[in-house]
Image 1 (cartoon, rainbow, N blue to C red):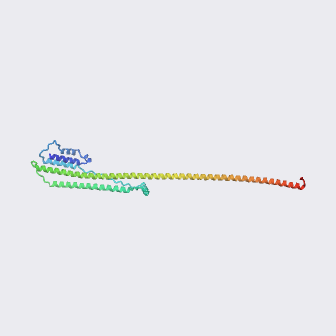
Image 2: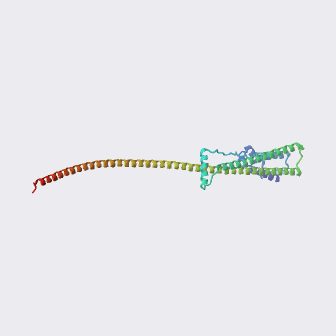
Length: 305
């Protein structure tokens, strides 16, 4: 009964030790073998187990244990975006905004920190996998050396308490190794999880930077468009103002010409009137002179009474 419970516990720990992704990769034959290796409570365990059945049980346990494979390390990608002309202009604009009291957004520092974080995570994962590989190779060599040193023994006629104890010791050792392997795999999973979290944080920082860069680029484009519209409006305004000034100047010149022409005609008319008045005055003066001379002549002749 103890042997059955030990085998069940070992099989249960072996199945719990597999990650979710790797349980799907186990072949159907291995699953069937693993299920067959765990007897139910209804099965009767014989009191005496031969060496062949014990070796088959250990082979099944070893086969189920070897089905555990380390998870593949995720592909670490490094996002390095070279600055374009718009980004250089954007950097100049952000520097100008910094002078106005705004916060400067340094994309180079952000990408450098993200790259360093990814490289550290990748290096840590590679070191962990290398240690795990060396440990497995060392364990395999030790098992091969033990098998070489082990001498074949004759099968006893019947199993004694010592054989049962030795088998229980082997099962305990296998369970212990399974626990250690599960702990190592758990540590590897934690490392992979940490690497995934770091990559996710780096991706989030990259997305934030892209959003900030697009926002800055949109602001810069809007500012350029507003400057262009204002320049065109100023040009239209000054052109209209110059045209209005020229029109007003031409109108004043035309009015001055008309005024000069009018005054010239008026002067001619007044000069003609002055000449006519002078002519009339001379005629009247001649008539008065003739009249006075006639009166004087008459007075001298005594014609006047």
